[in-house]
Image 1 (tube, rainbow, N blue to C red):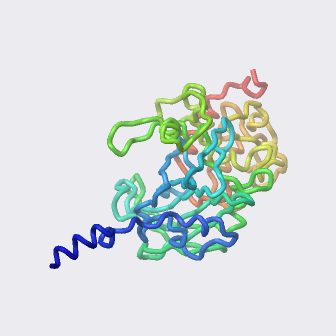
Image 2: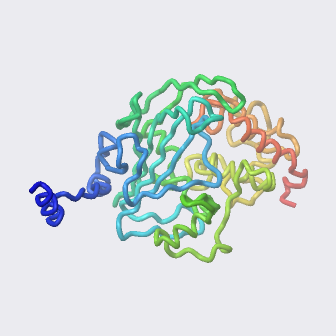
Length: 357
């Protein structure tokens, strides 16, 4: 009798497990942000370990440095919608798209998969009115993240790649700080997901590798992309097999170019550090600062070819003093490897670089 009831329930669909609900698109598109990250149903579990249907991981050729934090990135696009290809700038994400970035720290950076503590998850949501930025801070158990409009400070401890213990006062940005970095022509916009920074090889789940943009195109996620050879490509800053200049320019593009461009929050500086920029003076080569002061460190030009110690750019990257250091947001530590790379680029510049020869 029991077997018959089970069979009947199966035939009627009563015993079948219901598929998990998808991302709550209505909640995503609401004007006010959700109080909890879980309210969006971006993940199938409370620890953000299993992305929901429609979320795709992505990696960048050169990511932003944020005090050595490990980052995982996901993009959600609404069912039936595609991402439009653009050769320059951020890809054309449809309304309803969500960019998800989680910041975490392993107890030991040399063992990135062990004892990982999530600290925050940032969302960029493309609503009908434009992009909005929200930050969610994780509890100590890593089971829930709550909205923090005003930002906060979190004590973080980890062992770095050299085996040195680091105690960090990690800064979660407030809403105004998010807008400062993510500003383009006065509107909030993403920074990382540009064709040039996504055009790289990635590991496949079943083994092997494939070009990331081509994988998106083949999966129907991306439309309008030209052949792979016609897509721009940013160097990986830490790939020693690539030229120093290409790596340094990639590092400056990602870490500085979102503010230092003609439409960014540092447009009045005249220092433009995007990958597309080619004018020597705009890159700071032989260029005096717009406003002298302690930020210039008594140095005369942004970049002095052959002389990193005489270059304001390297001086400000080396500083951790508020009001002097650059980037001014997103870090409290000096990125030694990034600084060494930019110094190597300046050191290799010939004197005639100032004249663009």
